[in-house]
Image (cartoon, helix red, strand yellow):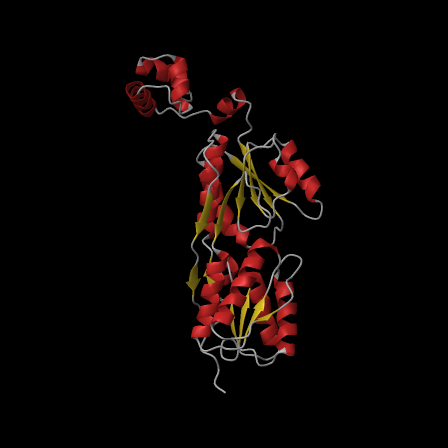
Length: 331
């Protein structure tokens, strides 16, 4: 016969307190003395009590779900980001539900809100109707355009990361450097920082037209092919993300340009794609796992009723040198 489940009644009896006081401890209420809180916590530990999150959520009219709104399932940045976000939420009993906005963003937002999530993480440009007065708490992850003043944000420092990428190439002796640009908040920040860093080095920046859709490998290939044909003297490319950088590697191969002997390529995000041995891409680690963890902690605080001033956190990226960059070719 399976062991009987330990309840808060058992905890209350063992601690010598009321069931209501145990409930207050479980909710983290400040109106409990330190002595009583300690007795309850010791009783829970000794009895092996495991909190019934589902029952707690039902009583509080909550769903214990968090929605994650993204704009592109194929963007590998989300892999590490979710690896950081999900464990933080799961530790507090929350389940993560991922929704891709697609072409009809209004329908995606309405569909997400219809499931009554306790909170939402937005990893795309923020839809206006997602921060209405009756909407759940929202945290924005990543550098985005038009972020409402009322939400918490966490992102890596895209301007610093782009500067690190550009300075790495300049330090290797490259003077003809192209940038494969992408639209959106992060893309715009990386683009602007690349241009500024090149001009500070006394060099002329070459920039492709920003990709108006998902910055994929296919788009990176097309942009790099056009750039390399139009400017055959280019010896290095900085791509807005790793997927576009892999596309640039494909274009270089097609045009007979050895990487890194004739052309150096650097990406951004340090995705699983960049870490593949066959690719071994030099890139910028945007610390997306840490961004996910921070987004989870921020959202939990808001879902638990925090009314502190809005928090805007920036995570510092780092350069990861692999085998796709080298000193500029001579001559």
